[in-house]
Image (tube, rainbow, N blue to C red; front, side, top):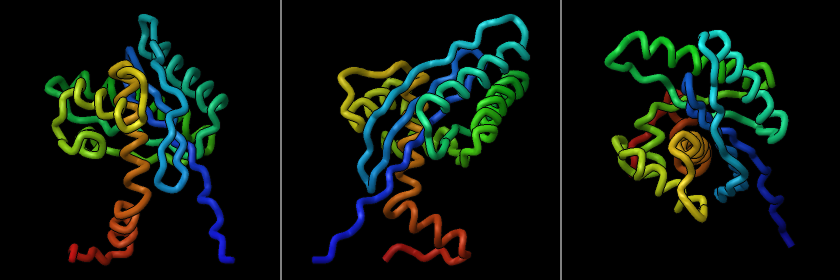
Length: 182
C-alpha cells in the first residue's frame, strides 16, 4: 500500500499594518485546506510616533510568541493622496516587518489589489465585501473587524499564492520561464 505523508502544517500570520490599528490574523494551511486560528487588532495608542511603533512591534512579537507562525504575509503600502500619510503608514509596516524578522520568520508582501483579488475575485472590492468573503472562506460565524479581515485576507492570499496553480506560476516566473496557459 502506497501511503502519502500528510502535508506539513503551515501557520500563516497575516498583517494589515496601520499606525492606529494594526490587524492580524492567523490561519493554518495543510495541503490546500485553510483553518482559522485567531485574529484581532492591535491598537497603538500614544501621542508620539516612536511610542506607537513600539506598541506595534511589542504586541506583534507577543502574537508571534503565542501563535508560533511559520511565515508572515503583509500588505504593501499603497501611494496615498497625502504623501505624509503614506510615509507614516510605511513606518507602521516597517515595525510589523521588524517584529517578524526578529522572530526569524519569512515575510511575503502583497498589494491591496492582490489581496482583494485572492479573496473576492475583484482587485477593487470594498471592505465589506472582503469581510464577507473572509467570513465565508473561513466558515466564521460572523464578520471579523475590518482590520482583522484585511489581515486574514493577506494570509489567504499568501496561502493561495504558495499552493496549487499560484505556486506553479511563481516557480516558473522565478526560473525565468513563464509559460502561457494552455
